Image (cartoon, rainbow, N blue to C red; front, top):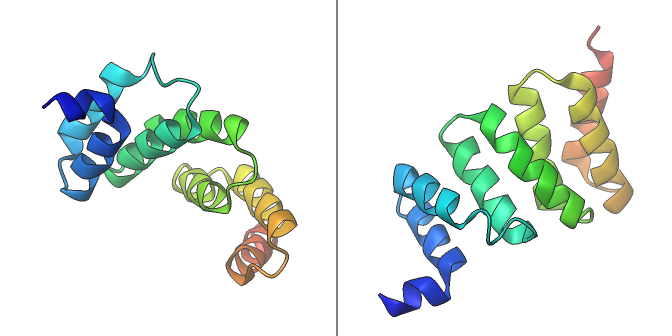
Length: 120
């Protein structure tokens, strides 16, 4: 059990992999103050909330992770999905634009941005 406290992010990922979402949320919330400036931790917590269909709670974690790491396409992709789930079209378009800036040939982001821009 000692290793659990030496590698808490690894344990959090394991809980997520094992489908122990409620436990992952509780464990992560206990670590939050210690890891508030850790982009990877924020990404994991945002993912946990997104998996349990709580996009509103996922968003602040993805926002914080993005502040700490603006060049992570996977993060931007998940952030886009959260904005879509919350019906925040303009924010989703912004995320797509940022992905395209980082990966100009990202066809998924190009296509999604085009679709979103065509919606009135």
